[in-house]
Length: 464
Image 1 (cartoon, rainbow, N blue to C red):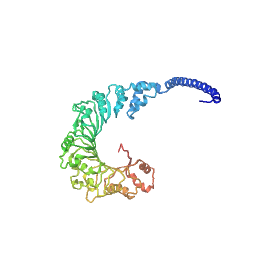
Image 2 (cartoon, rainbow, N blue to C red):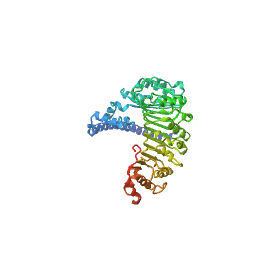
Image 3 (cartoon, one colour):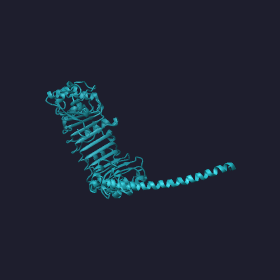
Image 4 (cartoon, rainbow, N blue to C red):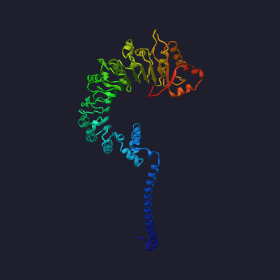
């Protein structure tokens, strides 16, 4: 209770507060009305402004083509262009190709996935899914299986601890027919190889398998195969049968070894008649030697042109000391050799003799010892035959112009020596800034006087 003297003072103040509150509510209401009116005016302004722009004069068909071209270079563009203007939104929604890349990592994204499928209007689509739970399984089975025949590129990431009996989506793929499928990628730690898409995949050319060979599509038409950290569970016979089926394979990449090769002591020779490129990346040092040696001993690839080895050391290639007398009979068509992060302290002679007919050699990485030994061996041989006699292009993209890791005159001496032997290195591939400095005459001219003897090319990771 408030005593009488104070009550008399509070009463007018209370009335004043009520009046001020009422006035405030009126102002807020007017402000809300003003903001609503501003939005209407702003909308009318934007419509007229956009109509007067150059973009407004572009026909819808051409605008849709622009969207499609930009979308091919940038994922997610479809959502951006559909939120800018009303016209752009209408054009985007009426351009089905913008909505043909569906990515779902959880059943919680069901509405978004359904939206994309609806807007794609039945066109062939790319699908990337991550199966982590039974809820995901239920969603994917109900949403995609009746459309899987329209899938053009399929990527599946299967959680390793999902029980076998709950893998309904993968089980439904066993007998599926995918007439439009061009690319398939699977990542899974589970179980023995299972044949899928037995109904046929006539257009499938690109396959990438990670961790296991759990799902194997038809391989007879495959031209590109990438294996990453693969663990096999069914023995070497299945692995051998898989390789034998790769009659159209052009490019093979093996990353971080293949566990089964460690126990494959006496593999039979497997002919890959179309193979032109072999890349072996050694991530786990424990598997390096066995993987490359097994591939080298096992694969007969008469058309192999390009070989790339990454992160190998001396011990991984010591077996070549005994095999080099075979010379070019192993890979007679080999012309391009790429060595990345190649660490060696042993003589490279056996390695160079193993592949005597290479014309292009690319040495990447910061190993000064490897570059020094290589440049020395290119100048002479302890036998009458020069190492790599037909070498014409040498790439050293990680070599500095005045590199302290190698003697100052070693590179120019190598260039000059090859010219005297009438086996010149015609093209030298260096880092872009190194080539720029060389062409500008920096550093001192006497250091660069030999550059006129070769054609300098800037290194491009996607090019040379």
